[in-house]
Structure formats: structure tokens, C-alpha cells
Image (cartoon, rainbow, N blue to C red; front, side, top):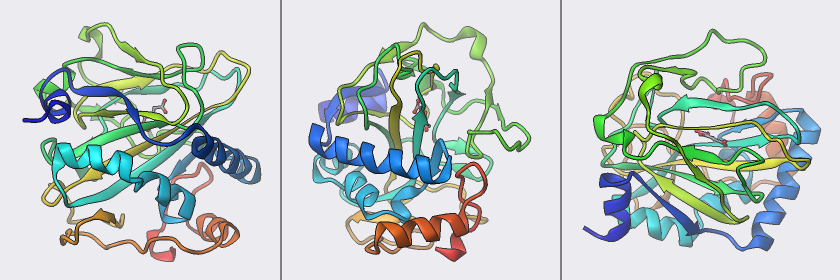
Length: 267
Ligand SMILES: O=C(O)CCC(=O)C(=O)O
């Protein structure tokens, strides 16, 4: 087993820092993301890779996809993405959760991997990712999703998780702009608020291989193939080639008031 596969699938459940984009490329994404934030007011952009070419390009960049293929092989698709913007001096925190499970999702941890990209520098002060080493080993935990409320930023993901009172001490994952962390989809993680005077932006991605989707009967989310030509039990998304203006128009037709995608059929 290669080293990166060993670290993510066995112990400690994550690997960082992973070189992903140049600082310049990440800065360009930061600028575009802040413009979107200003235009929409959203702090969460779910599945923006389906609307904006610059997000699809970032998540299909060969540097990261090569590392992902070391873990799950050469057939790779993107199951979901979340851009999370924490404005300066905000208490907005991401609750404890595991990426591979929610009420419509159950990912096989041997055939999928999560990634987190620092679009801005991420530090302990501005609310970097925190991972709980080794917690993937016991599989998925019970979870609860809060009733939908207009301010919810969970994007339909778990907001409470069983066993949170007996977790190990978290490992902070500060990352320079353009670097990332790859981690097991069962690894428990969270992040705190942003105490700095600049926004913190991160991009979370779930990469899957064939057979990773263990629950797909009511699946509406399309997958975007980034390597290989395998079949997936889900709609295959079109790579977005349209302009940013057109992408934003499409996004606004599909999104809820918090930035989660409500209607994939309109894309
Ligand atoms: O951006 C963060 O602080 C964490 C995001 C995260 O855990 C997620 O999107 O699943």
C-alpha cells in the first residue's frame, strides 16, 4: 500500500499538506469567490463546480487528482463540493461531522476520499480545519440534521453527532494558500469561527470511485467525472464551460436562500 493510501485509509486517517494550486491560482479563486459572496450574500456554495468552470478546473487539477488516484484508483468522479466562506470576525463554526454520511448519502470509505483546499491561508486564528485523528476507524456514527432554518449553513449535512463527548484532542490543520488536506470520509472533523480581520475561504470536495455510492435510489445530485470513463449510478454532470455570468444565473435558479442546491434538474 502506498504511503498516502496508508495514511488516509488506515492511520491516522488524513494527510497534509498536499500541494494543490499555486498561490496565484488560489488568489484568483479567492477573488472570484468573494465577488460571488458579494453578489449573493451566500457564505456556503454547494456544488459550485457544476456552475463555474474555475471551480471545476480547481477540483480536477492533476496535482490533486493524481494524489486521489493513489488512494482510490484511476476512475474518479466528484460527488459534491462545498465552498465555505467565514467572513472576518465571525463565530460561524462548522459542527462535528463525517463527510461520507447524511440522510441521502452513504459512501464506502475504501472507495472515496475527502479533500479540503485552502483558498485563503487558513490558521488556528481564522478557523482552520480540525481533524480527530483515528476516529474513522470505527466507521460512521449516528447523526442528526437540524430542522431546516434560513440561517443554517450545514447544507443538509449532519449538525449533531453521537459520541462527541469522548473524542481525542483535535489536530489543527493550518494550511498555506493553495495547499490541501486529504482525509478519510469517516474521519470526524469540524472548525471554529474566524477571529481574524480577513475572510477565511475553504473548498471541501468528496471524490469517489466506482462502487462508492452505497445509497443512491433517491439520488438527484449528478457526479462530475474527472478521470476515467466508468459508469456511476447517478446522472453524469456536464463540465461547465459557460461564462461566469451564465453560471451565476443558473446557480440562482437552483439555489435555496442559503446557497444549498435545491433543484439539480435546472442546471
Ligand atoms: O471549511 C471548513 O471549515 C470545514 C468544512 C467542512 O468540514 C465541510 O464542508 O465538510
